[in-house]
Image (cartoon, rainbow over all chains, first blue to last red; front, side):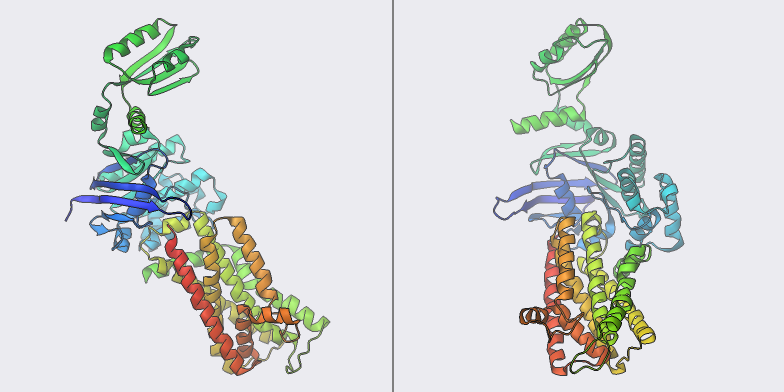
Length: 315
Length: 251
C-alpha cells in the first residue's frame, strides 16, 4: 500500500465545447502528497488547480491518467474516496434555507454523525468560528463572509483524514483567516492531510510543507519553500519608504525590467533578478535619492518565485 | 440507506423550517379547491353530458394533479438552487451517489404529495361533500406517486441544464400556465375547440388528471384510462432517463 495520502499519475482532463477546440485543463500531471502534510497547489487563473481538485474530490472524471486518495481510485471507488474527504469548494456553498446550526448538523448527518455528540460538536465549531450568536439565523440572511465561515466550519464537524480547500480564505477577514490557518496547522498536527489551492501566496508560504506550482495544466515547479527558493537564486526583494517619493524614480526602476514593481504612497517595492553587487549598488543609489525612512533587502518571496517562474513559462 | 435518509432529512428540514414551501406545497392547491372550485360551482354551475356530479367533485382530481405538479416544480426549484448556490457541487463530495441524491429528492417529493393528497381528499369529502370511490384508492396513490415522480424528473431536466435563475423561472412559469390550462384540470376536454382539445390530449397533465378523476369519482372510460396511464409511465421513464443523463453530466 502506498504511503502517500494522494497519488496522481499522468492526469489529463480535457473539456470539449461544441464548435470550439478542446481545452486541456490538466495536462499530464503527476505528484504525490505525503500523509499528515499541508500541500499547496499554486498557479495563475486557469492553471488547472481547481480542475485537479475536482478530479481528486470525485466531482469530475479524468480524461486519462489515474488518481487515488488513501489508495482508493477516484473513478472506480469514488464513494470510498468521499468517505475519506471533506471539501471546501471554491464557490460559496451553504444551505441558504437552513440555519447555521442546521447547516452543520445536516452536513454531519451525511457523514453518519448524528445525535447529542453532533450537536455538541456543532456548538464547539460555532464557537471557534464566531458563529455562536448566529446559530439560529438562516444562512440566506448572513453576509458573504459569514456564509464562507459556515462553509469552512462544516469541515470541522467531521474527522476525515483528508481535507481539500479550494481558495478557502475568499471573503474572510484577516483575523478569521489567521485563526483558520492556525486551525489547519493543528489539524495537520493531528495527522490530517490537507490539500489547498490559493492565489494568496503568503498563505501558502506560511502554511504549506510542500508546494506544486502549475501553469497551463502542467507542473512548473515542486518542493518545499526552501527548495523553491533555490529556483529563484539571484532574485532579491527591495522595499524603500521615502518621506516623499523622488520624481521619476518609478519609471527609472521600470527600465531595469524588475520581476515586480509596486509604488504605493511613499513606498516603492521591487523584486529583481540581478547579482548581489548590482542590487547593493542599486540600494546605495536609491538611498541617495531622498530621505529614506525605511529600507529592507531580502531574498525572494514565494510571490517573486511565482512571478519569475510564470515569466519564464511565458517567454 | 443512511445516505438516502440524510437526503430525506435534509429536504424535510428545509421544507419544515420554511413556511413558504408549506404554503406552496400544501395550502395553495387546497385554497384553489376551496376558493376557485367552490366559486365556480356556485356561481357558474357545471354540466357535463355523461357526468352527474358537481364541480367540486370534478375539480378534486384537478387539485390533486395541480399539487403533484406544483410539489415537483418546487422541489426542482430547490434542485436548481442547490446548483446555483454551490450546494450541489459540495454534495457531490459527500459519501452518497448521484442516484441517491436524485432518489432522495424524488422520494421526499412523493411523500409530501401523498400527504397533501390525503389532506385534500379528506377536506373535499368533509367540507364539500365529495363522494369518493373507495375502490379507487390504490389507483389514487399510484397516480399521485408516479405523477409526482414523473413531473419531478421532467422539471429536473431543466433544473440541471439551465444556468440562469431568470431562465429557469421563466420556463417554470410558462410550464405552469400551459400545462395546467391546456388540460383537463379545470374543465372537461371534450367541449373545447379542436386545436385546444388536441393540445390537451397531448398534455401529460391530462393523462394524470384523468387517471386521478377515475380513481376519485369513477369518471372516465377504463380503456382510455389504461392508455393514459401507460402514456404517463412512458413520459416518466423518458424524463427519468433524461434527468439522470443531465445529472451525470454535471461536473
